Amino acid sequence: MVMEYEVSPVVLLVDDSKVITGSLSKILRDKHGVEAFAVDTFQGLKEVLDSPKYRVRCVVTSFVLKGSPAGEAADMAISRGLPTLILTSNMDPKLREELSRKNILGYVLKQAECLEQVEALLRPVLSGNQGAVLIVDDSSTSRELQTGFLKNLSIPYYQACDGTEGLAVFRQHPDIRLVVTDNEMPRMSGLDLVNELRKIKGRNELGIIGISASSSKDLSVRFLKAGASDFLHVPFNEEEYQCRILLNLEMIAQFEQIRSAAFTDHLTQVHNRLGFFREAPDWLSRPECRILMVDADHFKKVNDTYGHDAGDSVLKQLAHIIRDEFAHDGLVARMGGEEFCVLFQAPDAAQAVDRADKLRKSVENTPFPLPRGKVTRTVSAGL
Image (tube, rainbow, N blue to C red; front, side, top):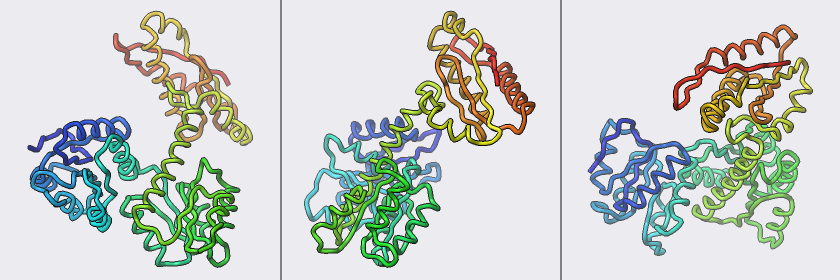
């Protein structure tokens, strides 16, 4: 049976286990803010893909289900050009070989931790912000092979034919989170490239995988000691390559999440004090930088009258107003309690005062919705 939804979901789940589809739907909603819906037969899959009502972005399907005894469901999704992930209860060598020939995101064995693996494989498709991969190799055949593997994972990529070009491409594209480099190349070797990259970004900001067909026993160690995160011997298969790519991108993503949590106020999602003092020196070195302090008036009265949850709501809305006002040219931070600080540029004191007064009026004219009705608030601001 196909269920109709008012908003077209993004992910189509095809499995006869309500536990799997229900749990995976919740994970995708909580982590990516996307909706998923489920069908439990091959016919259900076909109806959804044939219907103009649905906008399916990717498919997670069991290899075997009603109407699809030998992977017909996966083949149909692939034939429609949809990123496809396969769930299987069987992992015998014959099936693995068959799946390795399909253009799929990957396959996952149905077991205790399978849903986390599914979410990780879907992440490049759903989030789109995990970063790009730079392939550096003087062999066009090797680059073509690797970019084909990345296409199957829906991961964006750049290419370079040697270390010198690779360094230039890296500097041009700040979205690169992972570099995969060969060693023996003209102009600049892979080892030299690793050394240059590590002068720019550390291990918690950039992943580097060295690859080589060399028979040298110590090359992998030399890469790792030079600053590489990982090493792959050539030849490698698609499955191993993709696993290393995903693991290294996940590592960088986790570091970024930790940095963000360390420098962001958990309630208002603007910078916290630590984040402010980390960014402030750069701002203060700029000409015409202004410092604006903003304090919510009589904030204790909000907590006493409406409760602390209402007070938190007011602070979040206040931070949103300040952030919008200085979205393009300011550093906004919550310094503690109801006090905020903004660094911004203004050519003279009069214009700085105008910006501060505009913010004050914006807060004053904005109703703050609370569970027991709307309230108005004011702020005091000083330059």
